[in-house]
Amino acid sequence: MKTTYSDIKLGSEETLGAMLAGLKGKEGFFPYLHNDMSKFVPGASWVYYSGPYWGTEEIGAAVGSLLQGTWLSAGESVREFETAFSRKIREKHALMVNSGSSANLVLISALKRRFGWADGDEIIVSVVGFPTTVTPVIQNGLVPVWTDIEMNSLNFDLEQVEAKITPKTRAVLLSPVLANPPDMDRLIALCKDKNIHLVLDDCDSLGSTWRGKFLNEYAVASSNSFYSSHHLCTGEGGMVVSNDEDLMKIARSLAWWGRDCVCVGKGNLLQAGCCGKRFDRWLPEYDQVVDHRYIFSEIGYNLKPLDLQGAIGVVQMTKFDEIHRRRRLAKERIGASFEKLLPVRVPGEHPLAETSWFGVPVVCSTPQQKRALVAHLEAHKIQTRNYFSGNILLHPAFTNFGDWREFPNASKVLDLVFFVGCAPHYTESVFEYFDEVLAKFAE
Ligand SMILES: Cc1ncc(COP(=O)(O)O)c(C=O)c1O
Image (cartoon, rainbow, N blue to C red):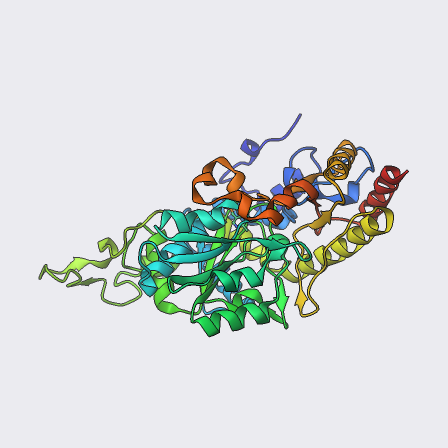
């Protein structure tokens, strides 16, 4: 009989560890181990392009968090994850939210408030990427100014970025597709010279470095995603990071209903709050004592995660470097197979970058070759993906925001480029399977 989660007996003598050990061998009980490549059967198992790099530790942390029962919404585990995460990527402040898209929404909204950007101010973005990198720009009444990519690296065309800066430009919003950064020296110098902010959507590129520093270290603030396919996974989840305390206070308020109080975790339980003056005269035009927890200083949202997502994140942090190493190895091995066996190109990284590859980009010679190769890989159970949106201005939601014809390389990407995974789960037998399947295509 198949065991289900409802078989867990709350309040019994059984410890969580014993329960997990008992359940471990039962078929179908650990669905998140579908990426466990130790049981890979060439041709029968799917090669997913990515997925949670989880073991029983993550499941244990999540279930343990529920069984312990202290925090359900963002509490001490979320706080612990924020602390470990910000330390690792060398930022002073971190705020966990319920997705990378929410992180982008909070990031752009908070930057607008912090730096007094006006409606109609311009933000430079790439026309190739993920929609929710750009949607918060539009949702905040700012104007996305599109730039094309250049075909060699499939990255932001920095010539175009420079040409598009106007007196209304407030920031460049960088989002390295598949985690591969452009020439950061040039981009940083450009932003400095023009006195505009460099903002980073780091959802795909967490772990990538430039001159040995994480990409976020060059940005005023960054967003991250912990969706299943990303470097770290908490199921769903996101993080905003920055060294700017004022910015992060606004960000936390926006994500927590707009409230002024920034107590988190145990701080929420302190009778006098973290500031020690929870009951005070907080309202400028009301001379009575009021509770700070119900003072609202922003037009906010509720984008908080569950505490169990924080608990999973704490475990995932222990795998941060291992995931980086394994992704890079997989990119190198699979990229080399493609280039050795087929007339395609696999873009690499800049000599000053160490990319935490999210996937292996493949540039085909013709649209027919792309179609045939994608069909062949999928028929052999190797997942493929588009190079994200391709030209985003071709998509129904974006057609009113610019003319797709002005960005020919972005359209070319739809014709010629796709990617396969380089997930940390991949083993030697997966690499050999890629060789076999690609050789068959070449016959
Ligand atoms: C670059 C980029 N930004 C933002 C997101 C959105 O993240 P989430 O799925 O966590 O909302 C994604 C995709 O997941 C992404 O690839």
